[in-house]
Image (cartoon, one colour):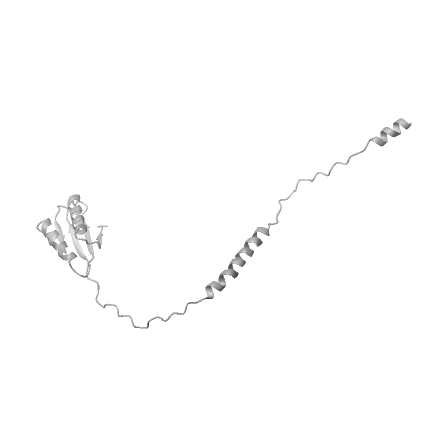
Length: 151
């Protein structure tokens, strides 16, 4: 009997750790710790920057009335039409050659007030003529040029 009693006292029963049952529902709580950290950082930045914004530099600026803007209406835009046969029209007036176009563009560039130019090429107009008008305007320094479509 002593042998069986000593063997039973040697046996130590170990208890197994309880196994957690799988959660039936997803966890619905939001971890607010990062949100609070971000809000505290923003609050500290706000507290630091407010005194900087309240400092002012006192200056004595000159007082005077600005001159009134000119009451002249802007000039009517210049229309340059390029026909299907390659003729160039200056506000409806046909130009005899490209030299006349160049002279008129040079005179237009010499004016003190820049004038808008509306280039209206026909759909069938030769590209070389349209390119010549654009190149002449660029060469004379005219930058207020718009290409108007015929839609």
